[in-house]
Image 1 (cartoon, helix red, strand yellow):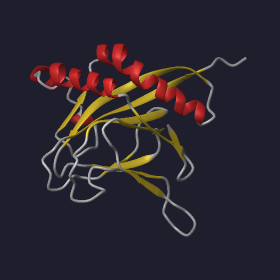
Image 2 (image 1 turned 45 degrees about the vertical axis):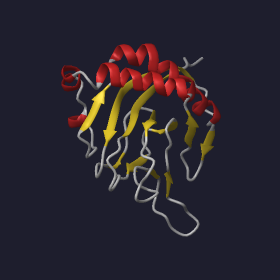
Image 3 (image 1 turned 120 degrees about the vertical axis):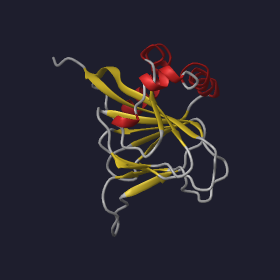
Image 4 (image 1 turned 60 degrees about the vertical axis):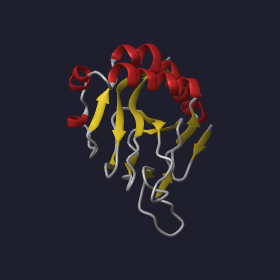
Length: 195
């Protein structure tokens, strides 16, 4: 686990256990992605900024019973290691799978909620450029003695967490037919009662 501080807001970087990656991919491939009715019903592409054909909300039952148990400890670790201990519980407000293929990308944007995250389930091995399929976080212009952005190259199992207001973008993958699959989510925090 690392807390990166390339600029003001922190970014959490860690890796999921292989068994958790397999559990999520099994759910997606055996339940959600092969069911055309579910894919139509849970289509998220019209409400998201990505220039990606297939973005699908996860089913509430899987989200509450499985995924929250996987990502919840990471969110807690991120908050505690960022010196934030004032939350009682975490709500996952929205969560969706992004299936990105050649030339698809996400323009610069921010999210809703308090904490957002992305976890990587598939990532092409061979890419034309090291930045292909990578994620860049932007906080300010880059100028003398100020680093305004940081680019992270994900691997299968990478999880990145960040304050939801942090701008970020995802580069397209060029000349490669492999899928870049991730799950993105937004979470809000329920604060501890004031005494």
